[in-house]
Length: 428
Image 1 (cartoon, rainbow, N blue to C red):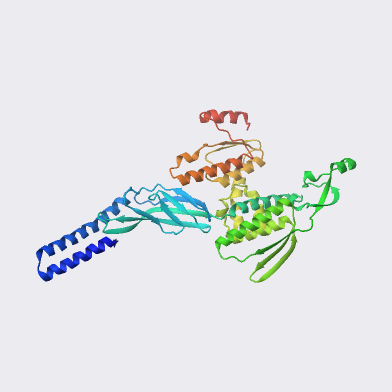
Image 2 (tube, helix red, strand yellow):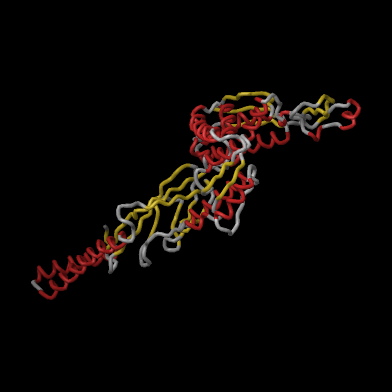
């Protein structure tokens, strides 16, 4: 509780008038001063009444929770529906990177670094005559999850590593390790070679597949990485840059001469193939971003099996156990089903997404028929605009992923009319 400038001036006038009335024994002056002090007292207690009135709009004993997902360094505007009555209230937050506009109806935020933040919302409650005011923290917890910009690129890198490890375990050489830009010789085709490198004339002469082998041309890439960073913002930038470079080298099948600099020491790795570069860059990015298993859940869906392959290659032991546990739960459930049976999933695609991705992936491997029955617009149940947007994007991601394994069927018919034909025919 504090007095406003207007309240301070009026209190000073009242005290001066009271002193003059006491010295001069002037009852009109004394009465006037007492009236001023009485007004101050009444206005003081009006703040307490208005504070109780404000808090009465919030559920008693409960703390409202609002979760917002944003990308570090990018501005985001989120509509807020706080039960604060329209009036002369001023609303603000306790962070300098977010502000409230439209009388508290819109939250504008730009988290500078990736991480998890709790934002407090404070309402300035003025008295009736505006002689006093009080800062009241409303019982609403706003949680901001700021994702690294490099997270999406890291997800692509982990998917690529999972696939290359899978190929190596099957005895095939990853395609990304082959080739270059300068023709070297002809050789016999081996599994994993690119079809476009097949020399059809030589294949016809030898009556067996023959491919053209290329080597890297001169003028390749020398990559020097300064591993020292100043904080999360620079870590995110470096991770984004090195992941982009490694993924491009993987796509072009271009070996890279790699060197790193840290604390005044240069470490030279020599020429590395694209997969080894991607392996090093993914490991370094996870170190820069302080990646946890929880943070990986915000990435695009992928089966735990491939993610486990990548994490084993990265020797990320602290992340292996949570992912492995989820994979074993899905594997155990699907293993109990007989081959050629039907997996019918009923529910939303906006929660338990990674577990659902594992279930569908394992079911597909065991040749189970897969039927997905889900509401086409689950975000309609949410009142908060930010929750609607998050549900809409999560739903779209899962639809894109599941379309690899099954056909998603929607119709305006009742549920039994929609599912019964699929179950009877076992056709997707």
